[in-house]
Length: 181
Image 1 (cartoon, helix red, strand yellow):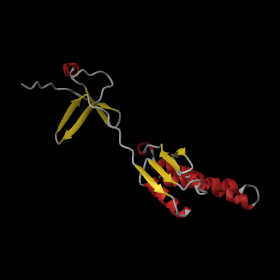
Image 2 (cartoon, helix red, strand yellow; image 1 turned 135 degrees about the horizontal axis):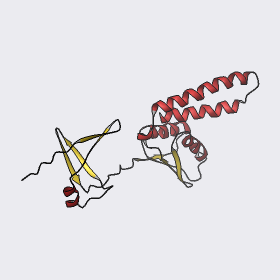
Image 3 (cartoon, helix red, strand yellow; image 1 turned 180 degrees about the vertical axis):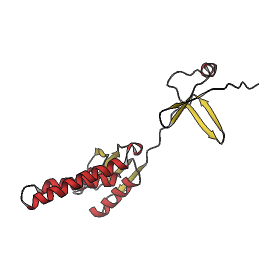
Image 4 (cartoon, helix red, strand yellow; image 1 turned 90 degrees about the horizontal axis):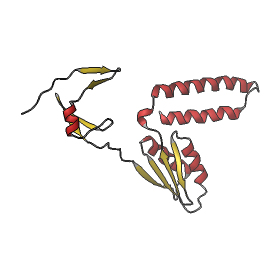
């Protein structure tokens, strides 16, 4: 026999609702505060399952072979991998490659991408930013503020009151934000 228990739905903030659970069900499934319960939407029914493990998304990884490639092609491959959501980008180099400093500069220009390992034959970069935490509105606002300041400094630069290097550095910041967006 199915026991039907009617519960009241409670509003919680702007986008969520809370439903209290029967104590007997919580005890029967050995649950406690903070435990995970999976919720499946089956049309007009919700199916609750106790004791579910939180699934962590699998890391997307890519290996880029830099041997015999020019720096522009490597830059395109690295940026493309970043934009396609790869979490770990490994660049395989020739032993003691002279391109390593240039590759490091490319990686530094991509927001959230940090070099985790570097050897004479490999550079491994990992994306440390969660895509769910990024606000496109905030990124555009930051780009706008930086661009306006650059315009003001450009006028001062023409009058020899500002340094060109400062403007160029902020242009790099805008590029980082652009790729992030």
